[in-house]
Amino acid sequence: MEFRKATDEEVVVAAVATLEALGHVNTQAEMQRQVLARLHEEDPQFRLGAERMRRIVVHSGRVELDICTRSVGAAPEPDEADLRRMGMRYDPVVKRWRRIREGDYLSGHHHHRGEFAAPGVPCPVCREPLAKVHNATLSGGRVAIGFRCPLCRYLTGHRWREPARYGFSLREE
Picture 1 (spheres, one colour):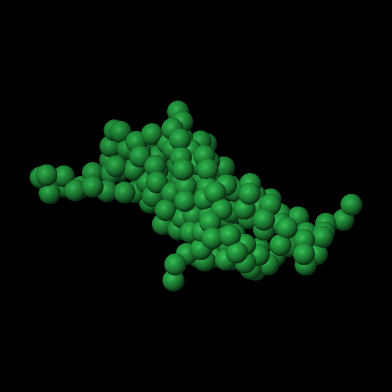
Picture 2 (cartoon, rainbow, N blue to C red):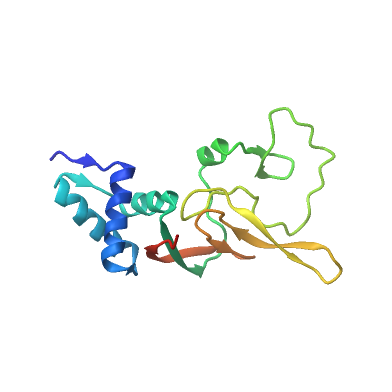
């Protein structure tokens, strides 16, 4: 059976049309069904996966994503290719992935016990690098309290939080 892969622009147009008609969609599976139904009106051979659809609409900037999370044990292991693509290398001294260049001298670098996962780990929702979230202390210092994705606003704290449910709505302009 032949099929066609919908382009990113076709997916965004179908998603925006779906959200204009429905207002809000409560689950990723329902959103994928609705978007695929709109794509099938144009061509019944279109295929679209739910995860690809989610990433495309988040990167478009036209769709707001509500992310419900649940606690899990440890952070998932990121794919080595994703980390290398983001300019990270494995540092055998501290046994973790960091933003270092080949041949960097690392013996003077201080690592703090209790650091969270390294900044730049891919977001589980949209694959953008996560950034540290800081809080001000009473003495005027700063302390890292977790990570946030700058694109989709996914947030995790001391313990890794796994996305469990996504809600979709149009971004207010």
